[in-house]
Length: 270
Length: 75
Ligand SMILES: Cc1ncc(C[n+]2csc(CCOP(=O)(O)OP(=O)(O)O)c2C)c(N)n1
Ligand code: SF4
Ligand code: SF4
Ligand code: SF4
Ligand SMILES: [Mg+2]
Image (cartoon, rainbow over all chains, first blue to last red; front, side, top):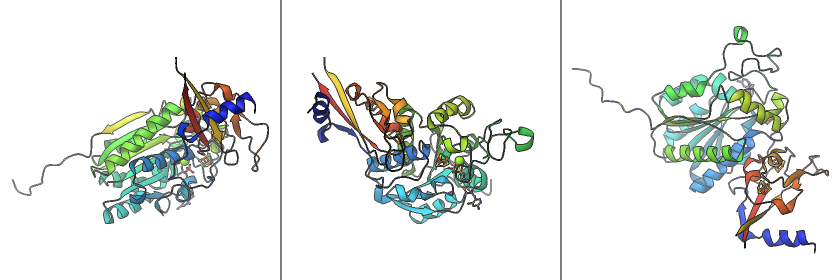
């Protein structure tokens, strides 16, 4: 045996294993394009569910968008909602089964366009759910149309000359709006483009799942993401573009941390 | 001084050759193979196996969870 093969044999042993695919992920190849951020976020959610030991107690609600098949990949109970309605479906599930950990997984078209009303009202009611928001600044699934989060000047199939503010309005910073709502418990913005960012995003998702078990309001995790197919770049170029172009408008970090607002008991008279 | 050595095993059939692991590796261990898997992707592999330190950067950024990482301290 060659020296290198000998060396590898001494390292590749069960006792030296430091990372392996989560057991909460099914053994199927995901349909996402090579390098798509959705896969990284799926992995983090599965890792967190495994670490918290809540595989049997967690219910996900998948969106319409590229992540519509999330239920094939993470081995928990799921419901699939109509486009944008995941927060409403999650509300119903959580209210009927308050002991469960319930989360939605939604893209920017789903959460910040067709589902804006459901999103805002679920958080404003302080529903005790987690919302995972994949902001890739485009409608990935349908062929790269402009989303509310598309940047000014960004070329998409429906803004071939770049998003124009007079024609298309401003990019929607919906996470900033969410953070204003009294029902929000924890609101954070993360990304998954480097190992360091992945570590932080994992911590944030874990915190959101843990807080949601305390029933103190809605936990909202935006992940600034890439859609290399929609953006027409390689995965590596997409990460660079995201850092340069998206981060200035969508800066990473916590926007709210502390639980929904307390209220004084209301009295009609006096 | 104790030194850390590592190795990764890539599931070549699941890999989509996205290159994200390659650029995330601090020791230039990984590369995309000239060969392709059954889906036609140039899968990731250890081009320089002796430089791996088992840091798990590659497995954290991999969207398809196809990298298993091993790490060992040697005197
Ligand atoms: C009621 C309804 N309207 C429109 C569509 C078409 N449609 C499917 S996915 C999608 C947008 C997906 O974008 P996003 O939520 O950002 O997800 P991504 O694919 O980018 O992850 C649209 C408009 C639909 N399926 N249903
Ligand atoms: S179209 Fe975009 S969001 Fe959809 S799988 Fe491909 S890269 Fe991911
Ligand atoms: S474990 Fe670290 S050093 Fe080894 S291949 Fe992966 S990124 Fe490179
Ligand atoms: S990150 Fe994963 S899918 Fe992409 S090339 Fe590396 S091993 Fe393959
Ligand atoms: Mg999108």
